[in-house]
Image 1 (cartoon, rainbow, N blue to C red):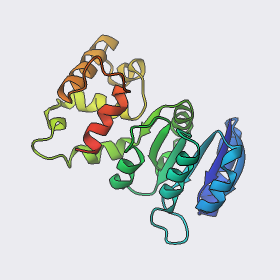
Image 2: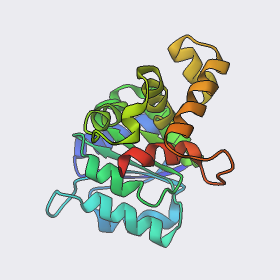
Image 3: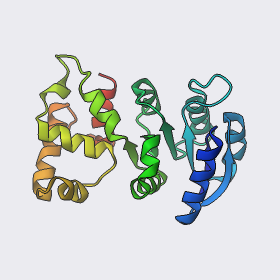
Image 4: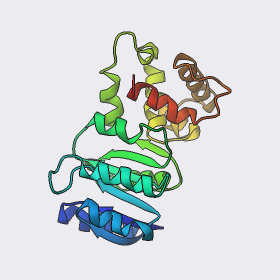
Amino acid sequence: MRVVIAEDDVLLRQGLSLLLESEGFDVVAAVGDGESFLAALPNADVAVVDVRMPPSFTNEGLKAAAEARSRRPNFPILVLSAYVEDRYAGRLLADGSVGVGYLLKERVGQVGDFVDALRRVAAGGTVMDPEVISQLMTRRRADDPIRSLTPRESEVLALMAAGLDNTTIAGRLVVSETAVSKHIGNIFAKLGLAVGDSGHRRVRAVLAYLHS
């Protein structure tokens, strides 16, 4: 799998390159700005992009990610951020597209989880950092349907947003898959996501509180 890395910090960029190459990825480019990232885009299957890059170090990486997906619809991108910046997370997922992820940079040190997240994004999945989910959960309005979720349903939603399937969620929570399915059904019902909805309801469940 061919990867392009866009990260302005030289040490982190080199570290990511070595890590991914050791895991069997082909790093076709490792660059430090959005323009260079877009130039390398045609040769890649997936990208890892920092939110903040030159020249202003605000949201150039996010803009480059949006432009990349404009040029190549649903091109898989895993965005890294040093802090929880929920406005960026919301913008990244605003169109409900698949093949996107948002992780804090500290997750890179958890090699297995980071590589797994990148593979899931490359396969068309959606991955949100658990810390982003946790902070967003505490910022909901009193009338937000998210607040009607039970603590267990909130846990399940956080794990869904991290891209985990029902079997893995059941293992993490030490419950049966049947129980997980029931919790997910309750989440969909409380968020008004109909059974017959043809969209990606797991993604839509996350978007429901990102945009509420």
